[in-house]
Image 1: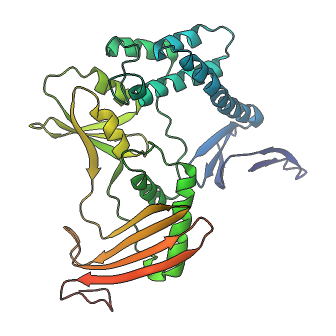
Image 2: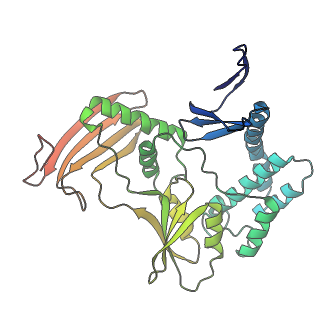
Image 3: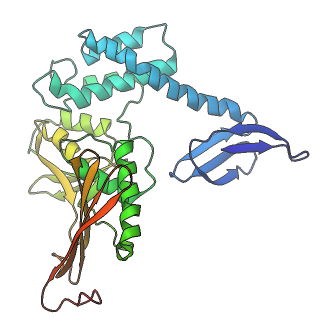
Length: 347
């Protein structure tokens, strides 16, 4: 919450709901705008002379996104292709600009993510009208619609909990972490470390980078669908890793379920293979599994000593937690080579 005060009287003249916990505030040097920094990493900015107008613009965009969902569902349920639905939305004079842009955004995302349910190209195809992918046509649509891309949503506040939750989703899961999954992981981490304080400094080692994907392209192939996916999922950097394998490392603008995104890229005909950018080394691995009924089993590998290619010493913890906040230690096992010191966690 941001409260604007009249300095001469101390009276609150305006209160703004910032949408996140405020950590910092700053006026621009000329005093024309105000910025707030939040605990979720987001920054919001308002016109200092009329901050409510700036805030209402943000609210208007959020309302447009919510209102666009039923419009898009109705068009696609009536059998229109995404391209025809987009043209109908673009030509509808009764739609305001925020609603039109939100609807076009949803249509593109629906076409890219759910094509596999209606065609033979698999999920993530950019063949919107069934006539074959054409990057010229796609860019023409972008020019007519305005910027459209996958919505990564707000940054989550705990990177460790987000990474564990993303890995838990698996290749068949959604592209983004559902809020309830993130909240559960975040809560369980605190709960486990309260019961076992020695695990407090033992943070999870990511299995893969949450914003990177390795892509091998077929030599000499047309790259229309690959380029289309790069536009939609907002690739911000491409590095050549191996010229012989035609292997590239893509970096995206936000964190995503890379295992699921790899399957989407893998359906493009010009892609030889797509896989996460796995990380070597590391010594601590936190793996939750749902047992049903709100019960989760946590398996934690706390390792140390020469961990580049697999640690020499391991302490394996198993806990079970439930949605009510109960926790049950199941087992603790120590396994390692003869030189492991399990009393001092050294070797």
